[in-house]
Image 1: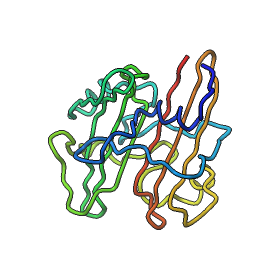
Image 2: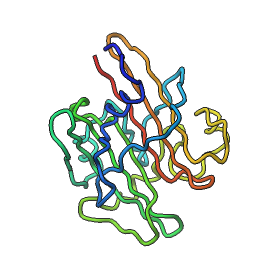
Image 3: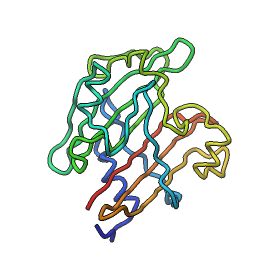
Length: 208
């Protein structure tokens, strides 16, 4: 697949996060937009997502397999055609930390495979809902294989991701590569409040 449009726009399309989505209820928050271009990376930064010992591989693990392994979760869908997005939503509460919400998403291009992960801090006192149930304790902690998740990233992780500026309100990166006849696109977007990452969008997709 030849890329003639903006690589960042392609990443947004593959992430399955249409800008028309509202941040209401348990819809996945839309992919944020920033004035500056994402940092281009020479190597794919996206790692498998670990839910306790459960390993979720983006563009590999399907939503149905994740739902079956976790045992709970409401399969949801928004849009139609190429704008369709399917997801599972889970809430993470902890008396010692801010509540969080996580979405495992699958765009129409991925045909049921998870190609996006979105996570966001919630307001204090937020609770699970029927369509975004509490993630069972045995599937925690939640983090990517390199340690990336909500919270304050370590100096080692900042260096690995290319976060050279401290105190910034956001960070975005983009990787493009080719494996065989597949065009690979991986993108990461992190929003900060002070040193803490409060929202996280990660997408990894392939296409002919």
